[in-house]
Image (tube, rainbow, N blue to C red; front, side):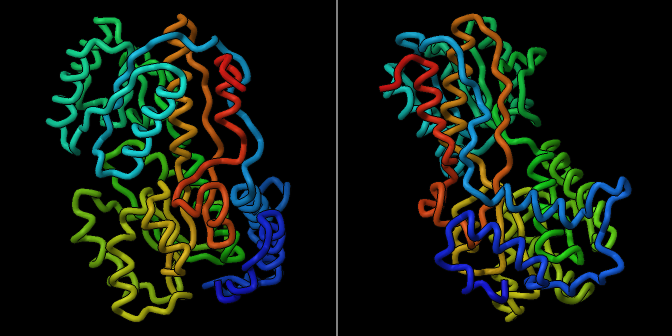
Length: 387
């Protein structure tokens, strides 16, 4: 934002209030102000789209103190053995999930270990077969379930419980595929959060590009939600809806960014399904000396590089992160319910937005999102382990 220095030192609540005041007063980073005759009102007359987007953005950028997860369940099963198979231990989020699974297991008296999927379909298959051979009680993985379905079926026949972390396309139980529960944030919730943020920050005048990878269902769900939510803003404009494969991101993203600047001119916003795209977009913007107010990047996943860009004002202004440690606790809780013969607990946490104004809170100083909702204590209480 042009007046970003004025935000420093505010509390989260104060920053949220100031955000609404600034938007309402017209202090936006890269868009002209809407005319008083067209505020982007919705068809039902229940308040303007802009006002709703502002309110939603305030809620998503504030301290996440409300616990909406389980409050009851079985006491922790004793002496269980689980194996975590990450997509790739070089992937920050996957590594965090598995490292937290191991740490929590140690705390509750379980045994846990990691078998690296090494980032390839063959690596995931090998890791699953190695894990099955060790006869664990459960396997939790962030690999692609489609790729290892035969191994999932084999594990299930042996009585091994399967829990996923971004394992399938959407959160929830998937009994047909023998996945007890897949843990992830709502793709639709993430998409709406990004679109609402742009509507709010542009004062209902945002010109935006949506960047996604159609190969992955979860990416399509996010992008479709972005498009649908952004379309509610009658005074906003969607410039392009771009399918850019993640497998080609390093070569295609720089070209795409350069073409957008030439074709659409400044200013514009970009919202995308993964912060990873911006690793290759920002160098182009920096080398081209593109004004910081001219391109505003909004992403998801909460990668460390995204935190760094937001913290340092390098074009990216927001990301929707995953609460990795909370999700690891949730994975252990789902295992525990399965071990007791109980159904899974359907819990999907609300979307949260990291911005320059709140990046110092809730784990942001460590490039992580740890909600201030007391999740660890809630789970330990359910398990009968709270002190």
